[in-house]
Image 1 (cartoon, rainbow, N blue to C red):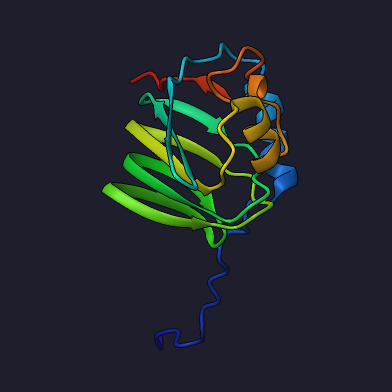
Image 2: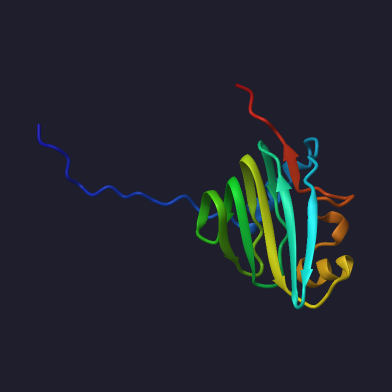
Length: 154
């Protein structure tokens, strides 16, 4: 018998679309929601929003209207413009384009910080300026529907 040298086609996994991430978000709403503390930082012309994501948390993010930076510290698997990526870094920096809706799963406690160019300091107006959400809908808000804490049983 001769070895098979025919080319093998490896298709990359499809990129999660906004529709798929929104479907995941609807499913996550069925589970108990997790507390993800949020901190806000301001400097002239800059706003940073830091979010703590506990290990075992599945979540989705808000759709942003502007390009911005994300600084990630921890261990999280997240949808990106290029597909699903696992980030295990002390301080990874990602460029995030407008219109992207992300989904993620934190394998370990993770800090996710977004950095935006803006002069706005009022949180309600700021969220409307930067995202397609209201402040109360975001993680940490009273109407949060973006995270579920589902630890895997061993």
